[in-house]
Amino acid sequence: MVHFEGVSLKSLLHPKPAGLVLQYGTAGFRTTARHLDHVMFRMGLLAALRAKKTMSTIGVMVTASHNPEEDNGVKLIDPMGEMVAVAWESYATQLTNAEQDALLTTLKDIIKQEAISMDKKAMVFVGRDTRLSSEDLSQAVLDGVSSLGDHSHDFGLVTTPQLHYLVRCQNTNGSYGNASLEGYYQKLSQAFVQITSKVNAVKLTTDQSPLRIDGANGIGALKMREMEPFLQQRLSFNLYNDGTSGRLNHLCGADYVKVQQRSPQGVEMVAGERCCSFDGDADRIVYYYHNPQGHFHLLDGDKIATLISTFIKELLTQAGLNLQLAVVQTAYANGSSTHFLQNNMKVIVECVKTGVKHLHHAAQKFDIGVYFEANGHGTVVFSDSAEEQIKGLAADPSLTEDRKSAAQMLEDTVNLVNQTVGDAISDMLLIEAVLAVRGLSVQQWDKIYTDLPNRQLKVKVADRRAIDTTDAERRATSPAGLQEAIDGIVGKYSLSRSFVRPSGTEDVVRVYAEADTQANADCLAYEVSLAVY
Ligand code: 16G
Ligand code: ZN
Image (cartoon, rainbow, N blue to C red; front, top):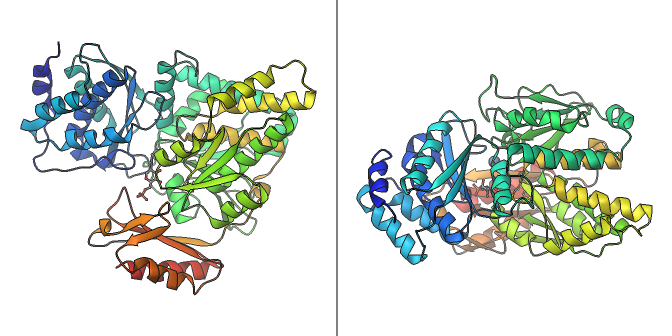
């Protein structure tokens, strides 16, 4: 029997400001933390319903990722550790926007529409980032769950991908790993130690300088400290922006580095030595270095996808495994990366709409799908059959040494990857493993291909929803005449490409342009932004 009185009573402690309307966007709800208390309570309710519907544990993560400290946000995690099903995003929006006196009716409507049986108790996993507001907000989520009489487990401070991992482990009876932070550290470290054990330890420490990690003053640095003992000194790293003094995401972090195309404050840059930046909830990562002249070089999600997919492709060939490998990108992928992947590497490249859920689903269509957004969010997903074939081969006693070693390295790669969602820590360990095994310096990695100069701009317009796009956001279908105008401008430049799309997270239109020189990319972006008005 459900006690909706509990919901009525407790919801009064988390009242909705009348008239406030919010939308579950690309990355859940995200806005100033002051407006989120009722949202959190209601997401606790919705997570409990989703858990009952799927008869599985559901996750709720409280974070606003790379956004400023004053913001916060929340997203739901489905049973296999994926983003919540799209159909439920609209329930999230309905429930959040129901005025106080309509909350129960809206809740009951969802229960009815989804034919949810309310008898069984649900379990919800809750996690949060290091924002000041996150503790109270995650308490509101817990209140939501308990007001329906359901259970929750509060994991406290975790990275977003850690919570995704925990949810998947819980729902797969341990076959994906142990549903604890220790389980996460053990699984990843073991795989990392195993891959790098093929590299001479002396070589590991002398060839590479320590990795400099910018923790964005967020959760990532904290979690790297926790993980350090598990890594058995196989990775030498120094942490900067670890949250002990600076402000979260302020002049640092993956988003700052990618958008500003410069190194973060607080990291001592030494020419030629590699650095990486996490974002505020550690689901994104970018690498970079300064050359001897002090010029900044960025290795973004496209370079990461290229490094990882090349590594996997070589191992597949060496192991003699015939598995289909694809790379999924968005329209923001640098044209040089797409060209290199298609023409030099000869892998399948697919382009989809911005937003992790689109990339993730596209990648799942292949035996092995590597997906990355240029902003550094990405991972690798393996089909069940691919995993079985890799495991089977790695355990085959009749293999030659060469094939066996490749198969085992593939198996370790499967274990090193967080297949639920992009994970800065897991991606970093995989990148470090590849660099060590292949004996590559960051400069050699950078030289795999040369990025086309590019520029991103944002344009404030009266109504960004007037712009519709098609072809994975590469072409505008409305307003009438816009695409023709863009085509005309693009035609004036060489090696050029440009597109516009309404942002899913800010009230702006984004403009992307690339061309043969930086000056031309800048001019192209500017001209296209004028066409958007
Ligand atoms: C969100 C997305 C990210 C995407 C960004 C685009 C997730 C978890 N995050 O942060 O993948 O790149 O939105 O933002 O899906 P935009 O629509 O404002 O350009
Ligand atoms: Zn993030």
